Length: 158
Image (cartoon, rainbow, N blue to C red):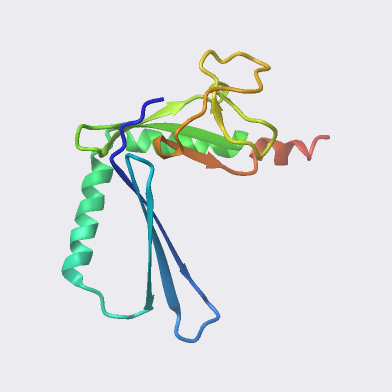
């Protein structure tokens, strides 16, 4: 697993549906190559005027980033396969500019963790029965986890 990320963002927006003013809060986390995290909070009201120029610039930037990932549709399809087994992992490959250029699927048999809630670790040789693997840098991997559909459907037949 490589570590070449320069900057990554994690943006979460939440609104309170019960509040009269429909306040929205955004939490923006910025990660740099050293692993330092900067967190900013913004708050606004739904319907509040926004800077149209800034919004267009952000939209164009995100479009450029997503279009720059050469296998984006295949990567999203692989993440959806995680619905059946409960998890899917993609390794981020970065360009020299620090942007993601590829999201490489890593098959399920290369992953181990301690119990159901332990940290995911990389099992380089896919050795069955291995309880520990190599630690990973979370900012270099996309992890999708959900209740496994296989587990839910098996209840119909047990």
